[in-house]
Image (cartoon, rainbow, N blue to C red):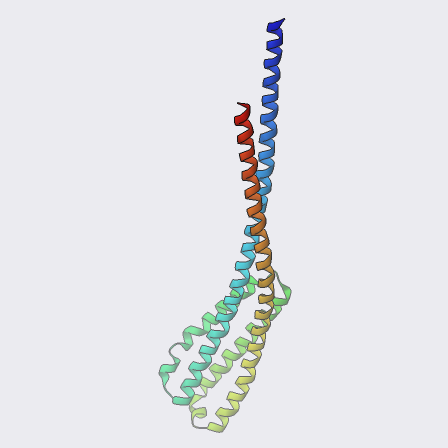
Length: 212
């Protein structure tokens, strides 16, 4: 009888052990899955912040290069010094490259995509205008009145470019502010989940050690 009781007790201990082991493993797996999802969520938020910063950088580069092209042509027209034109031909394809990159980056945002298309259209108009000034430079250099009129027209075009640039930048800065808040919240939640996960493992280790 005593042997039978001992065998029964042993079986119960084994059953309790495996039941506890399966329960603990399931709990850890569940917590690990939740933690993994939280980390994925944090990574997604971080990617959106980087995406917004890249849009801002590409926009800034596009307009800065256009200003540089404009300065090169203006310097040449005012001084008749061809050294001002050295960077001009290199700058033109770079401007289009950065604006095309903006088109891809803003493909998920219809408002921004429209603004980028307008920016590209106005930038191309501006580059065409600068090419026109160069092709007629001999006449314009010797005719100050005509040059001034053309410069005034060019200023209006550049003002429009600046407007689109400002619209895109303002919208992205609003998105960036929101996305930074979301990222900070996700980081905080992830830190809590990691701490909670560590505490659970520590608790399991202490209970297991006590039972042993």
